[in-house]
Image (cartoon, rainbow, N blue to C red; front, side, top):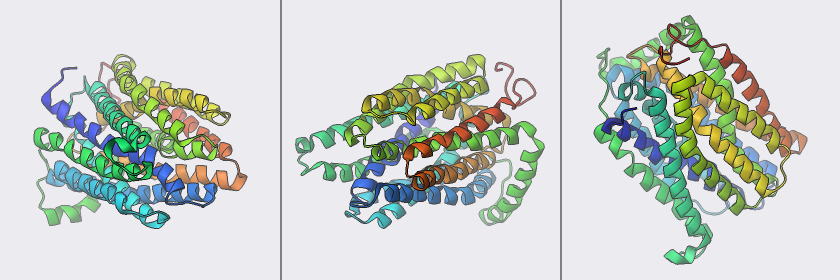
Length: 422
């Protein structure tokens, strides 16, 4: 892969916004939500509240994503819409600093809005991939973004963890204050590393040339037409169905792993260390999966990653110690970025040229629609059975069915992938 300034500018957005997914979504927010904003509340109830907040954010994106994608393609405003949603996420993330102890409702509202900003910006970020990379290096470019995301998110998480262990070093009163300040730090980090994409990456030229008002009206018509087009492209809709299922399991692990560990009695510090293991394992692993995708095909790499997730899920239902959690964090780090990166690049090859935002709107819609079900399913099964281990096992259905459907997707020349892939 030839590394260009535009590819680096595009990939550094992943470096920036991964601070939110790592530190807020997967790390500090679940811990703070359970121990600070839900202080004294039963663990099953706090888990359900967290799952409900995640699912509500996903529902909003499900409703908005296809229309936003259609508008972006019509107006050639992918970068402007990315900036708007990113700034929403940045503002709401920073505002978490202001939420007082026990106010889980306000924390949930701000978190939902931050998630909408994060997920909405990713629609337009993903849709820029075909314009910065060619078919021959799309797997490696997509993997570069995820690998930088793991590295950047991991470095900032490590700094924040160090601050919580030694709050006096910077004059803070206690670790609680450090966690609150970390939300501000994430917001600034996200903002700074959004700028390279906005400055360097060129806006793809629109082939539609519509006015704003006209585009908004036509967006709904185009969404309907895209639905029919997806139905006519067998490999596209089959892939989207598979993706809908298996990414549900991946996203649920990302969002609920720390909460699951807390429910089993694993210490907060151990869980954050495990998250660091995942981040720094994910950096080289995502690059490795990019090579696997380029050499053996994106589908092969995704299926390999899903196989790892199946083993992790079974092991997670039986684990009891922090050391076991560390091993699982390492395994998740091996698979997580690879599954995400290769899914994005595989889909980018399948969609029609000039409609990337519109088709990635459906891609992100299905991903977020899946994320409505996963956290709620895991939380609900845990409440009904009184055992969080039963909840984690429910993810096997998602990984298994998603993998089987993906196996049926035909790839290679004439089926959505370039001749260089299998």
